[in-house]
Image 1: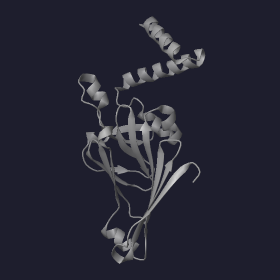
Image 2: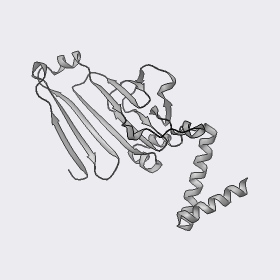
Image 3: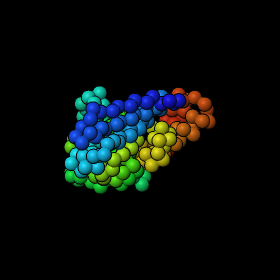
Image 4: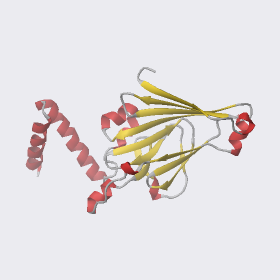
Length: 212
């Protein structure tokens, strides 16, 4: 399709002649993808009750950061998160399944990258380990998921969903996060003013020196 590559998978017939159909749409210009999963056949509802749908989102080894020490280790660590209403919550703080509202985002983030999923259905989410999340969803013959797999950059996250902007600097203490956001806004203003990123960084250093 225009703007997306489409992959359509249909399983061999399962119990009660039910087939599972999975349709991926992967953006050609961004970091987004969508997945539609449906059970087709007369015994679909009975099959679904016996085999509830579960989605496991897991990062690969290349997503895991190199070993680090001190504050760098804290900021580089993989974290399973849930994002709703503009707030980010660490799933590792309270082990065990947590409710997931329809349209809510969950996934794994590192310092610079995020692997996130949003479901159209409600359910529960759990984090078996820091590098993965597991979604158990309400019974439905058709489910749709939206994915974001890309850098933690404010404009890219907000283009996917305005609420994902809260992921930027979310791993920092609240006062340090606001300081970092302020410096980022100042850097953007200086870059727009002078039209050169290198000069803007030098001017930012001068501004920080003056403030100190």
